[in-house]
Amino acid sequence: MVSRTQLIADRRVILLFYQPFERDSLFRYDRYIKRVVRPLYNLTHRRQKQSGFDVWFDLLKRALAKADWIVRVNDRALARKNPEYPVGLVGFPPLLDGWDLPNPAILGPSLFDHPLLAPDLMKDARFHKYLVSAPWMYDLFQPVYGDACVRWYAGIDTDEWPDASGCPKDIDFLIYDKIRWDHDELAIELLQPIRKILQGRGLLTHTIRYKFHDHSTYRRLLQRSRAMIFLCEHETQGLAYQEALASNVPVLAWDNGYWLDPLWKRFSANKIPASSVPFFSGECGETFRDISGFEAALFVFMNRLSSFKPRMYVIGKLSMRESAKKYSDQYFSALT
Image (cartoon, rainbow, N blue to C red; front, side, top):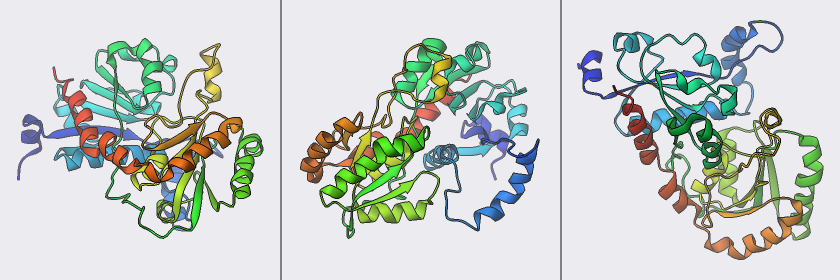
């Protein structure tokens, strides 16, 4: 058996550190109780059991493993014994609290929603690169973090999300409701009018809401659907709509053009450009900015429905192989 020291010497190991999002809900430190109770609770429901960030991290690990890297997660002892060897820090800001390892580090994806939450972050000599996914996030972070800011994306597993175009279809549009802020208001202004327009054209719909379904249910619905309407304010990557694209289900997406997280007002007098479909092209489908433009976009979308090739876009632009290469290249660039 090859020793861990030899694996490090051969540069075959990637050391990742991950801390999922946790917070106290009812009383101080109840997050630790939830760690124990959550696996039992998950047996009782069919909602999503992983956060989008957990899935993101899992895709990173799987892509690296498929590329024959040996991935160690939260192995502080190995990192401490090899202080010049790089580490990757993925997750949420508490991961950085009291971070005491001297290793050169690659930060991201995830961590901060806006660079001004930690404007001096990259002044730490240990931190070499900060990874972002969406092009609009790069445009947001690069002016603050400079050349340390680099682009990456999670690869989509097209074996896990196979081509569903040959499956029997009884849903014209699967409506994916991922509206996160002002949901009640936008349900009236956006979601309900969309349903009414589709029903008026005799199109059959089914609506699912973010966090209220599991992956197996979502996969079955994609298999039954000719197309999907994606409703979300903005995405850092957008795994759900990309899973639809991988399944060869074209997407008609609400893309309002701005970062609508209420946090934006803390840092800017003007709205910050963003996208709900940051990885997208004419192969994938169409977009609309608001309800006034929906019917025109729907008309174009329906006329082009048979010509879309969304799975080909995912294979060419969001492969796990290229995702692993992008990450490993940045990771080993931190070797001093």
